[in-house]
Length: 101
Image (tube, rainbow, N blue to C red; front, side, top):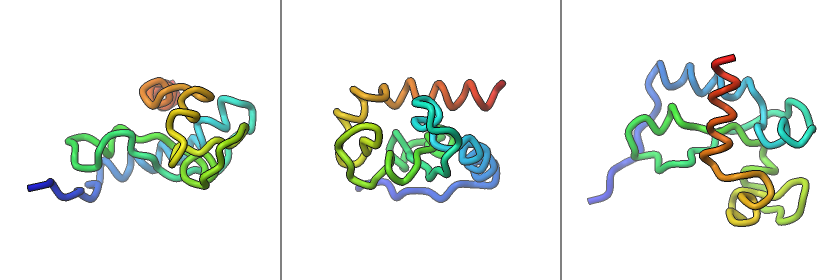
């Protein structure tokens, strides 16, 4: 039986809000500044700590469906997205560095 996604707890909600304050990590990296973001879960939302491992992406980079630069969308163009901006682990590392510093 498949696990059901779990809603974030208070600590996770605070973390998510801090991540959203960063703005889109891709836009920030390519020089588009601090554009408003939505949360992308690189790991299944059923995994433990999934809400503590999130990436802020603007609508265009997250799910708008664009397949050309500068706004290649993660959904549904994962391979193009990774080739252009890096894999999700490297983006997550950038997010975590910004949160620490």
